[in-house]
Structure formats: structure tokens, C-alpha cells
Image (cartoon, rainbow, N blue to C red; front, side):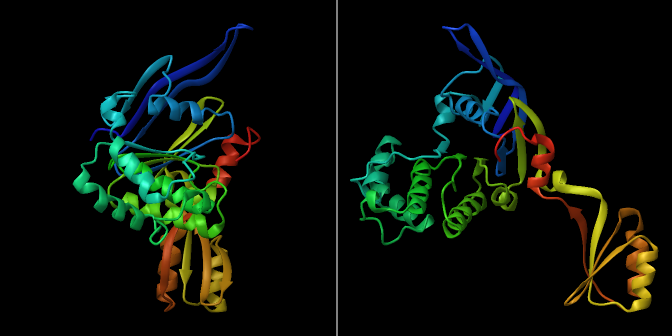
Length: 309
């Protein structure tokens, strides 16, 4: 399967001609995003995120390496026709309403006139702006503007959505609204490349993560794999007596009482023995799963004081 985005040893250096200063922005950056995935693209300020997105979109060119977007070279008009872009800050004409703005962009995208009205209704419903189509954008809340921006990015029915801080500045309700829209886009088969500083938000919805720092990829891969510690499992049971509790602790398990039973943390190597003892004692195992760290913990381990998260 062809990757939706592929960076292969991409480098970029900015040159300040007056002082002769060379500022490296990217150095041998490599990663892949497969179709239908949500990929979180993370890093501190100055890590190279904006440069990478600008190269992906064809706004600027890399100095070295290869970039493929939807099977084409970055900047190819055939790739651009299949990309929807959601910038961090929108500059919509405030005197327009949503219907007029979307109609304007539909014409730019070459949407047939007989399809435009239906498309606008579909997009307005998708981002939950029903009833606000005729309200001037200048009177929209920040969350409404963000959702309208997502609708605008979908006018051309893109295969790839590139989103730069799509929930920046929103309250919790607004962030949930945008998060729900992103999940609905994934469900419809879209690939989403998402840059954000809100780590707890992206951890909830992302399949893949790429973390960059000082122009280098410091970690990339499946979110669940990267967050799994690998040496402990969590077992939830519907109850236990003191005898079983002591038996678990003798095998190095950490036991925590919950209102509905026990939470047991035990080494991966001992999980089978512990589960069998619980079953033999007549208790139900409600769940068994690897212990996960958080994206924030992983990020701080890799980036540390490299910048604001």
C-alpha cells in the first residue's frame, strides 16, 4: 500500500544572507503515514514542525531528501488537489457568512454548480453549524470559526487533511466538538496529519505519532506500541479475599482496592499464574491489559526542556 505521506531523509537549512548564517531546520527526517490513519506530529516550538508542514504542502522546497504525498512529489498539483489544509489561525472575510464562504471555495475547487448547494448543506451538518449558515463570520465564536475552517478544507473532498493546531484556544466543549469531527473524518476514510501542543487531546484520537526535536525525528510509531511499557500488566477483578490478596503480593503484585473489586499490577512473566489463581479462587477477571504510560510522559522523556509542549 502506498503511504499517504512519506518523508525520506529530508533536510532543510535556512540561510540569512546578510550575516552569512545558516540555520538548520530539518536534518535527515524520515517517517511514513499510511492511508486512513490519524498521525500526531509533535515537538516543541522551533523543532521543525512548521517547516515540515510547509514542505509537505509545497509552500517551500527541501534542500535534500525525498517527499511523497499521496503518491506524488510534494508540491505536485495532483497532490495539492487532494489535500485539505487547516491552519492554526484563519483569516476569513468577516462580512461573509458560512454559506457564501463555502460557495466561494467550491468555485475555486471546481465543484459543479448543481452539486454546490447539496455539498454546503452536507459540510455545515458535518461540522455542526446548522442554523448559523447566515450569521456573519465576524460574530462566530473561536470554536465555530475552527469548525468552519474544517468545513472549508473539505470542499474539494480531499484524501488528506493537514491540521495545524486545530483545537488551539478552544474551551473543553469546543475541543471535544473538533475532536469528534476529526474522528468522523477518519471514519469516512480520510488520512489526518495533526500538529498540536495538546498532548492529552491527540493521545485520545491518534493512531501514529511522530515526535521531532531540533530538526530530528526522536521517536515515531504506533501510539499504542510506544506507550506500552511492556513489563507490567493491569488485571481488574470483581473481588478478592485476604488470602488471595496475600498470595498476589507474594508474587510481587501491587494490589489496589477499587469500589468494584481490585486492580492488580503484576509482571508480564507472572500474569498467567496470577490469573489462574484468581480463577481457581472463584473470582472473575474483568480485564487484562498492558500497563501504558502517557503521551506526555513519553514526550517529556524524549524532549525534556527542549521547548514548550
